[in-house]
Length: 408
Image 1 (tube, one colour):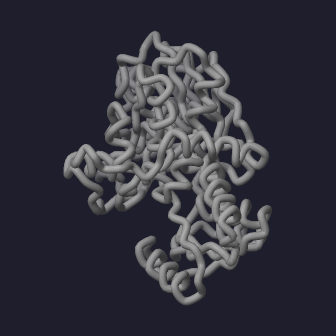
Image 2 (image 1 turned 180 degrees about the vertical axis):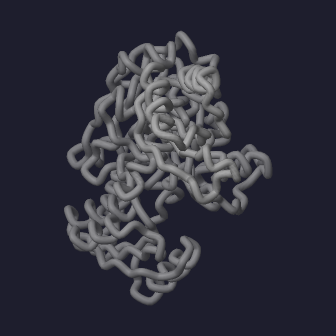
């Protein structure tokens, strides 16, 4: 890249944004978590961005962009393509500032987010089955109606607003070694990294992406933003097809490195945050903790680390399933098929061995139709609650020792 390239956002832009949005954005807490610190063997601080009114950090950039338009006298209206947090943030602050907001949502947008935007006064248009199709429609409407398109993660005003998060963290924590930040389109980490590296260049900025949506990682490999076909991920807010061009230019100068996390690690991090922090955080917000729990950042042990819990708009429709996925990953929910006697007392013997090993039966179902030709035996599918993976292994060993055959 040409070293003389001018970046679209400066540190002064972030400082100006901090002053501009101060009276309309929550200065979110950044407290030390004793429980997570013990678990991660580091001093962990959590920046609670999910406490913003619409549940995510997106409000910072949205308010900054809208106020800048207002200052320039451009209040005819704004439009954006979004399936989630950007739409909510833009709608909420547009309503407060009396700037009309139109949101184009793809068909897969969660119903609750669509309804929330409508209740807050947005003109919501459903179009297309992909974000790209929704974006093209938004561009058409913007040109026809003279609206200003506000990009959710690559608009310079958005990036500057998100960068205020970094300034706040530095004001809230004196002795910090690293900040771990989720990456989707990279607007948050770009602004945050620019702010932090300007004031405290020794602090390491680490980005985290889902393995199923590695758009920033692929951009680094290609040397420029490139289209990535993402797969479904629990961190749906990070499932961006292409990292922002402005965000990428800033990010690659200031982000120290990135790591990838898998779906089990994300699910387990969500469960840990619910249990230990009493916080319901969406997959995107839990990505930083997922990286530490997944052993991706062992060098952070013993250091002071800030995690940006960037959003809490989790789909309640999948929350129960997600918890189960996390419990399975943690070895606290186990399923196996056992072969037992189909005579009186066979099932009681199985339940007795499970109880003696300190496990709790959640569900048992018989499978006579697909058992083998030996009519004295029957397969039973067992779901049990256990302490951890070692407990599961010991349970299986004791079942075998007691004459109960385990198929899986």
